[in-house]
Amino acid sequence: METTPKVVRSDEEWRTLLNPAEYQVLRKAGTERAFTGEYTDTKTKGVYECRACGAELFRSDAKFESHCGWPSFFTPLAGEAVVLREDVSMGMRRVEVVCATCHSHLGHVFEGEGYPTPTDQRYCINSISLKLVPAE
Image (cartoon, rainbow, N blue to C red; front, side, top):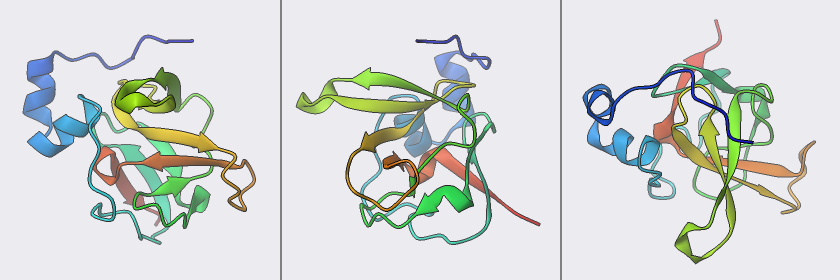
């Protein structure tokens, strides 16, 4: 079920707010190179927000080591924090994860990979799509 984003900006406004790399991932569904993102190995406690709009998306206690090259979470902060939609790009069928507030691209979610997590899901998220707000 597709929802309407709460934050809507023109392409020009997004280009002004985001640097070119952020824009490519968040607004054009790009992907940062594996093992290059600032949060891939971060263990800092806190909340991960959408870099584009500031909406709270994931908590550090849902982050786990998947060794895939991107930050991985087993669940979003709340069911309404993200929107899932079918992605048939790259010659395969995947499930894209976007911010529910502004519909910026975050990454993809995978199931059934055997990770020892409560949900058996891996939200594989681009670091550049996130901003960590450390716990106090």
